Image (cartoon, rainbow, N blue to C red; front, side):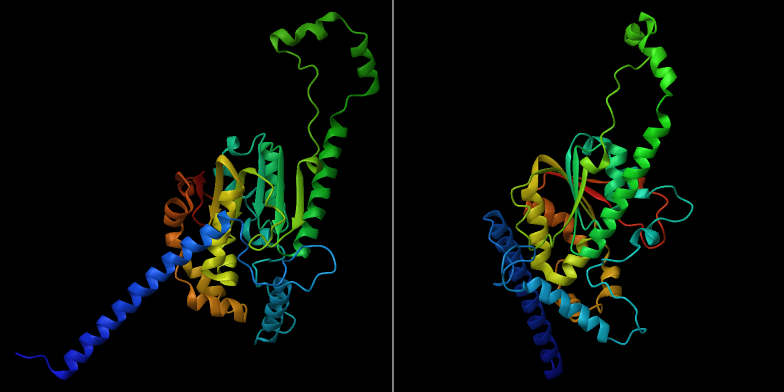
Length: 342
C-alpha cells in the first residue's frame, strides 16, 4: 500500500530535522576544536576592541560596554523598583545564601583535600566577596591564592573581608603571647626546656604563622577575556558555581575558552575543581539580561557534557566526583563538585 501524501510529508520533515541536528552537532564539534586550538596558540577569542583591565589611553573595552549594556537592559525590565540585578552572578551577600545558619563553615570545604592546597599556588575564579578564598588559605595552608572576579564591588568586599580576617588573626596571636615575666623566666631557665625537642614535650622555635595578607590576594579580572594571567602557573584552580554565568554571557565559545585557559594555566599534574550549575539553574536566570536570553537559546553544550569535554577535548587525564561526600548544603546549592587532574 502506497503511503499517503501526508505520510510522505511527515517522513520528509523528520528527515530534514535529523539532517539539521547532525549538521548542528558537527558544527559544534568543529567550534570546540577551533576554540581549543586558538587558546593553545594564545589567540584571544574576544572582539576586536581591546580587553578590560589594560592600562593607558585605550578605547573603552567591549566587555565594559557589554557589562554596562546588560546592566542597563536589566534595569529597564519589569522588576521591582530599585531591585539590584546581577547579570554575572556577582551577588551581594552571596555567602549569606549559601551558608545556612546552623553550619559553622561552607560545606564545600569538607570535601576538598588538603594536599591540593597545602604549600601550593592556587587560583579562585569568580571569588565574589572572597570568603571561600580566605577560608581555603586559612584551613589548608596555601603558599598563595589569588581570587579574581569581574565585579570591582565584590573585589572591594573581598579586600574588606581579608583585612577583617587579618585583624582577627593578629588579635588571636596577641592573646596567645606570654606575659613578659614568663619570657624572662624562660630565658634564664634550665637546659631542660632548650633540649626537650627530642621527646616532643615542648615545641621550641615554632615558625610564626604567615600573615593571611601575604598569602591571599584579590584582583578584578574578566577571566574569559583577560590576558593578564597568561604568564602565571597554578597548582590548583577553583571554579565554583561560575560556569553558568560564563556560559550565559559568552555562549559555548566562552565556556570552551574558560576550560582551555584553565588547562593552560595549570601546572602538570595540577587540579581543577569545578562546581557546575545544573541546566535548570540556567532556565531560572536566562532573562537576567538581553545577552543571557540570546545566548541561552543558542547553547548546545549543556552541563551534562562538561565532563566529556574536559576529558576528551581539553585533555584532563582523570576526574573524581566529590559530590557523595558533600553534606549540609543549603537548599538549591547541593551541586555536583568534580576534581580534574591535568
